[in-house]
Image (tube, helix red, strand yellow):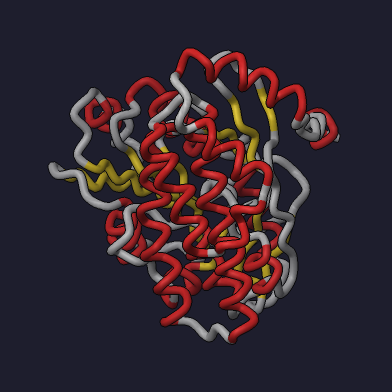
Length: 328
């Protein structure tokens, strides 16, 4: 059994997700592990989110940080961490939700390990508006995994709602406040010092919907440049690490460009992202996918749908691992 002295701070980041916020809050309140401090940070919502949050303030574990102005998510994260009193910290976005035993499962593991272990994480189930479930990409980083995370920095990632981390990780490596949102870079910095424990069990549900997919691609690639510069200049990267980041940075930009044009999105932005990828690593232009992607950015939208069907048939993806396998 976990030691009840192990207090956990759960930080819920809220912004204009009133339709889903109740599910997020109740998934935390109803955790099987109850020694919680719940900080709900609302980043200037103009829907009914603030009213929903106020309905739960009778729960004395809840602290409501009510902001009038929308700011960078990283700034709100750091503000919440500064007042957190838990030994461990977990984050949740207001359109996602936890499985009932997420915190209990992770606390039991961290309580059993020494302080060289900083993070317990596992798969997150993605769920779309039709309630279709998939695991998507999973980064099974375990033990000392800095170079592993570096190699997989842009191909797979640790979903920010998955980990339970020691508060010491966050105190030592706060989020960069000059980027909008930080995920991979933050855990990469944690991994320079702490071990990660990978748990092959779903811990949370992440919703995929129109308000958190398309526009995120643009935002991510613009913040990406700042992140890479900081990681290289402010961390102990040797030339091998820099080469790894450069290679995978180019692939990340190419991925963003590819998914943008394939979804009939902003073709001008997709073309620009392809050019960024080529400038980062010129040989990426020899990739068949890069060549096809650039070609697609010059086509009228009327031709994109039939071509996408052909591409889907030709470039078949590996199927997702069956969800039920993880419930065993």
